[in-house]
Image (cartoon, rainbow over all chains, first blue to last red; front, side, top):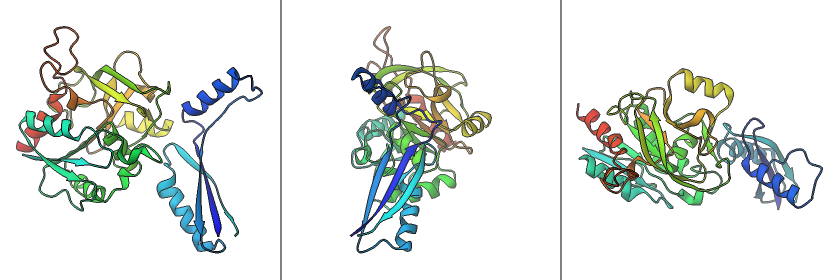
Length: 83
Length: 229
């Protein structure tokens, strides 16, 4: 089975309180060296056999119409992983 | 006057919204997310809760539920639609209102009596208020932070689409203290605070005498008067 991976991230100008909370906790855990943490989402869309161009196009449509909200999020990557 | 109240899996405040419609003098009509039509109603309320568990994003799944296609069509034809809390999130996700709601700035569920200012009294849901009226109704949510890009925010402000604004300290990080917006036509309104929880004397927020707390009722009487007029 092949897989299509879709990565969605909050847009850079949008407040990301979850990322900020993670950054704060990392500091309290003494895990340092990061100037910022942002939290996004990864979706895995599984297909039968190898990933086709048509399936990638469908994944792109899914990413734009449902998996992300363009007001607050960007689709940063869509890629196929072969079976 | 029949006003539809839509229940989705995970909706919590449909009974309160229906009660608000009834106390305002209307007839609430229960609707279901899987219905294909809202039927013979003059207006629709999308109530609060956590539809579909708020999976993916708050209101994201509900905003694409079957009944939303008809609500979009009817809204485009001018039918008044009110989204409260999760209903507001659905309207944003459905593209009926500008902007989006994200996690509260302080990462906490907020439950408080909230002071608000009516910024747009030119909608069917707010016409009974004077412009600039301050009201106090409950605010209770996890994802109530109103977000829009600079460009969109400028457009929303410039077109007078801010319907309701927080007064006092910003509770959740919402841009420009925005608590609710309307569409450009004005018939679709969404807000995070809950007018339907402030409709009965003695049961809504009233720290002074404990016998008032009906500031939210005007949302429901406004639409009834507008529809009858």
